[in-house]
Image (tube, rainbow, N blue to C red; front, top):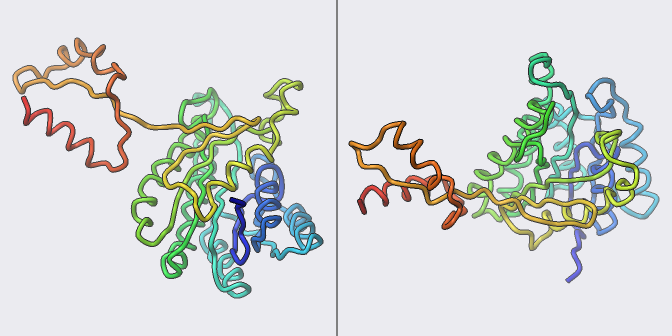
Length: 300
């Protein structure tokens, strides 16, 4: 069944270039009215220009679609509220939010200034929080919403020189996990995209021969699925170079120690069993872990 967005309104942050541009153009091609948001700064977040976002909006309009431009800084809630207000004034609803805006300030932790740690958290994590907060009540009232966070393998698995970026991207997974519970009864579905693509953020990091496969469009195919009407909920979809996979956070069955045996030495001695992935489970609510441990204790 073809995925369409006719009559839907989408906000895409960081849509002036790279993945965001690809996302905005594809959503528009499939019928969405799009708010093309981009501060228009450099990869490290400095500077600013409406030109990249305007160019994307112009392409959408030239192809018969509808688009408006926003230069809102996602780290500033007042600017985000104004952006959402413009969309509501023009179209009366917001159905899709793609939290894509991001910057890089890579350095090893020992050399990193805390200001560079904070600003990356402000844009990636708080930027996504701000945009989501600004549309949340709208989506609840219309009983429909599709939200995509942009996480990263750096957040889920780690990457040298990206402690700030990794912390922000891991935080977005935790944010998603709770929002998809709170939004479920309003048909607000929240997912996360973990992209691999050649954009200005990956410049110089990937061999030339691999770059041709790492297209933004291959990632966008995954993103569109995550914000479709029949989208999943609470899915971390990894996408790039034609590969699509799901990251799952699971918990091992672990061990039980009786009160008299609850020592660090016995925990260390049981580490092989603690690490054994046989019988590992994916939990979708925090209390499931409590139930598991209490259950083990009651059984013992």
